[in-house]
Image (cartoon, rainbow, N blue to C red):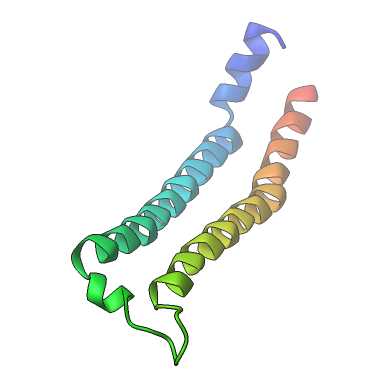
Length: 102
């Protein structure tokens, strides 16, 4: 790709829209993930008795499903990002490249 093509794409309003949407969405998901992760870590640090509550008569405590919930949440939030990237962001990218190839 030539420097002039890169400059034209950089000035394209759809490219600016793509950058803004992708950045905003990425930062939102990152902040949500940090809240979930550090919330769990804060529970470990400051409320061990809460996490040590047994579930039923077994040896499993509340901390185990909450920890697994953090892992599942990570997978779900990643899938959510990938789904949006594969639909909305890829469509905008295709439009930008189509305009550039004219």
